[in-house]
Length: 301
Picture (cartoon, rainbow, N blue to C red):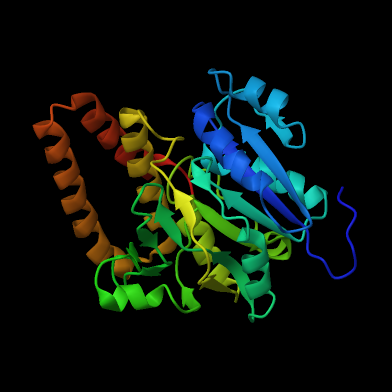
């Protein structure tokens, strides 16, 4: 447990890994440069087989490493890390993708903002591409009024650019970088582990708002984010879980009236996806996607 100076909030940074140790090392190097005084990095490994655990143990002894032994999926693995942080009486948890690069002032800026805002349930920094352009691609996400899908405040157009310069409430925050007070988690609960991969962050976003809290985008130095190292090269698995989780999510958060609109929309979306995969001769991915839709309808929610 961290010994805290008076009036200092402790932050536990949860980084999930499943292979791709090179990305994780770059992420951990950036976290070593944080200027915030009280934080602990927790790496939750989902059964990596490429030497990730050995690299972390040898090069980052200050990191608390939790080994799951197998791939539990994003939601369950994140819950393992968050439960540990709550047992250590952390004030906040910060979920951070293992292919993200944090600026040195990440926690100073985030905590500095959220302590001045009312009813904070979750907060996110801006996210930029991890390349030479460093183009901003995420400044919070709003919910489509009808389909409930996320509509990003992204980098396209001057209206959307202006969103990046002001603190504003948002509807969805993604698991790439999300700061959550542990007091909120104690009241609302953790990720729904039925959502093995995808939509777990959107589900938690809605549950936090339903409990009366607000989600905020914080205008600050951006977190650089690359192509997800955790889902890279998992075409069939990715399509299966995206389909399965989407069905579970919409079943959880829609009534029969809204479903009359969403079901045709989702069917059209599924048809487009399967057609696109078929044209690309990705038959295994197409079959996995259809299996995910079917399994999402079968599971109890």
